[in-house]
View 1 (cartoon, rainbow, N blue to C red):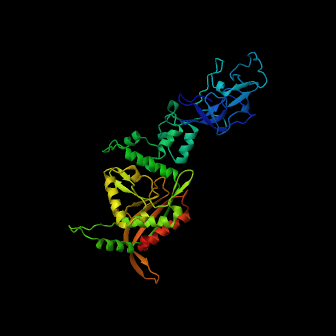
View 2 (cartoon, rainbow, N blue to C red):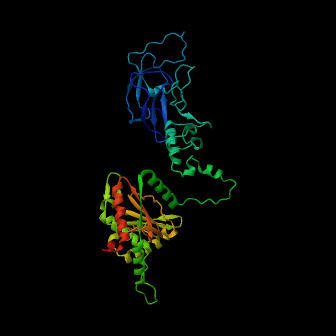
View 3 (cartoon, one colour):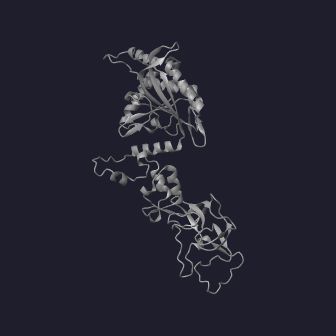
Length: 430
C-alpha cells in the first residue's frame, strides 16, 4: 500500500483491475484505492505474474502493507534493459516482489520511478488520473462523483497532492445551490460581480448551522410530498367566535387572542394521536414512536429561524397553546430560548399563510419524519354535490414525509386525519 500523504495511514481497496494468475507489465493498473482525501489507481512497475492478492475489494490496508504479490521470471526486471545485456540470475521459484517495494525506483539508471499520481494510459482504457484542459488532474472517484452530481470539474479547486481534484473537493461543492452547481468557489462567485455593487454579509453560527442541517436533510432524508385542499370555514368561524367571547380585563383588553395557527397546532396534535404510527422520528437503527404530540413550530427570527416545541399539545387547551406559543416566539426572537425548548419534538409546522403564500413544500427537520407546510386561507369556488358553485375559505397544506418512517398510505392517512379536524374543529377539542 503506497504512501499517499503524510497524514494518510491506510487505504481502502475499491477495485482490482487484475486477477490472481494474470500477467502484468510495467504501467498496468493493478488496483484502485480510496482514502479520506483521495482516490487513485496503483500501477505495476515490474513485469511478472500477479500470483497472490492478499486484500480484497472493500478491505483496508495500512500504508506499507503487502496487498499483493508479483512473481515470475519477469519480476524486478527493468523493461528498458538492453537485449544484449548478460541475463540476470533467475529468481528462486515463486520469488515475490511486494508492491510496496515495486513503488521504488528501479535499480537500472535509465529507468525513472513511476509517479503513482501520473496519468497512466493503456491502449484500451485510461484508469489514471484525468488531466483537465486547464492542467489540473482529477482522481477517478472525483470524476465519478462530479458526473453523478452534475459538477463542472474545470471550476473546482483541488486540494490533493500537486493541486489534484479529489473526492472531498467535489463533495464540498456538491451541496451548493443550483446556480453554484458548477462548483464555483467563494472567490469565483465574487469574481462574477466585480462590476456590481454588493454588501457581503458574513455567516454567523446560526446561518452556518441552518445551512448544514438543511443540506443534511435534503441529502439524507428521502422526502416525498402530499398536498390537500381543505375547507377552513368552520375553523375560521370558531376562532372569530372564541376571540369575540374572550373576557376583558379592567382595561378592556381581551384575556386572550387566538390565532389560526393555534387551531392548526391543536388539529395537527390530534391528527398525530389518531395516526400514532406517524407520530415518530428516525433514529438510524430504529424508529421512535411517541405517546404525546410534541409539535415544533417554525418561528422566523433575525438571521434565520428556530423551531420551539409545544409539548403534549394534544392535551392542552387552545388558550394554553396560544399563551405558550406567544411566549416561546417572543423569547426566540431575542435568542433567549433554552435548548430543551427547541430540541426534540415529534413533528413540525411551518406556516407562511400570513405572507399570502398559497402553498409550499417544507424541508423536514431531522430527526423528525414529517413537517406540515400551511398556506394562506383564501376564498375559492368549489362545486357542490348538486352541481352548483359556492365559495369557501380554502386552505392548502403540504405534508413532507420521510419515506423511511412514513410510507405513502400512512402519510395519506395522517393528512386525512388533519383535514377532518380542520373541517370539523370541535372534534379536535374532545
